[in-house]
Image 1 (tube, rainbow, N blue to C red):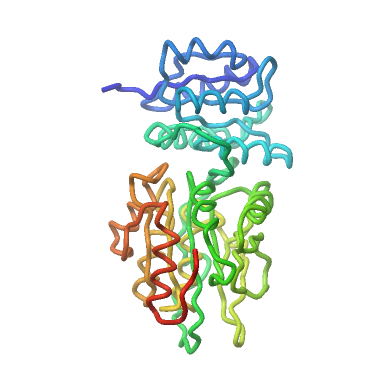
Image 2 (cartoon, one colour):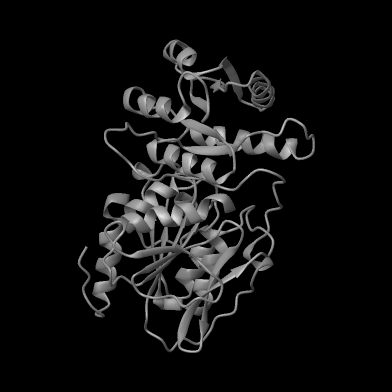
Amino acid sequence: MKDRISVVVIDDSALIRSLLKEIINAQPGMQVVATAPDPLTARELIRNLSPDVITLDIEMPRMDGLSFLEKLMRLKPTPVIMISSLTESGSEATLRALELGAVDFVAKPKIDIAHGMQEYAQEIGDKIRAASVSRPRRLVAAAVPSTPPPLLGDIPPAHSADAVLPIRRQQISKTEKLIIVGASTGGTEAIKEFLLPMPPDAPGILITQHMPEAFTLSFAKRLDSLCRITVKEAQHGERILPGHAYVAPGHSHLMVRLDGANYVCDLSQAPPVNRHRPSVDVLFRSAANCLGKNAIGVILTGMGKDGAAGMLEMKQAGAYNFAQDEASCVVFGMPKEAIAMGGVDEVVPLSQMTGRVLAYLASLGSRSFRV
């Protein structure tokens, strides 16, 4: 068994290669075994060294990162972390990389600032560790979106959901159901697979996916173009409608609130929870508070434990909850923690998740849904 996670760094900037090598080699239990200025140079290195993880720039000479990633995932699936610029074009390219099979991404390191470098190094270390135990899948056909967690910069303290809203259960007279979804690493592809079969008359769906501000609008638009339901980035105070899915914007926690006879979206820029904003625990607690047994919880692939405590609160309030099984997860962190805490009613493969959720809704006697 290897005692270190081996990493190959591919970037056309010698300075970035040197910086990433220094950061990664300083992390316990990992080592950069090679660096390359472009994918063509990297091919032989990867063939000979079989690294555990590759970091890959997007814009490079001779062959761009996306073209190389597509070839790699067809021929030799390997955990890849993209090095991305956080621009509109960068977000589109990164979403495409995630859909092609990249496990995760980090922003380009800022060479000219020392502040935040410790947090940046910690984030890179965490993501490489998660990637090293992930399950990259061979690319066999054209694809569409896959995951990002939080961003760079200062890694915030691990507040609980108490930092955003207290536990305050409401009396519930409504019977309208909502589906409440949380995900992180591997989640964009999992969410796509979950939403694609949803019928136009599906209950309203609220989604927290760990994703920075530059990405959530593009992610929602991409899903909307693929799905039969309407998918949009959530806006503060908007009514939650059947046949619609609402994605938490990268700058805010997403919560559900009862406003008169309607459920509405609430957004909050309160402190990060479990080092995330948006946080799954915050969404799940809001569902426990004001939905009770009208909530159906779904926790998908992801690194860490965000959502586990909130899912238990949902179950205690009367919700019925599903977790993605280990075999179909990219990273079995969040579902594993939710199962261990006792908040999960059913553990289901991703391919069966939509059908099981709709079957459960139909069993309540409201109506049948056609997948």
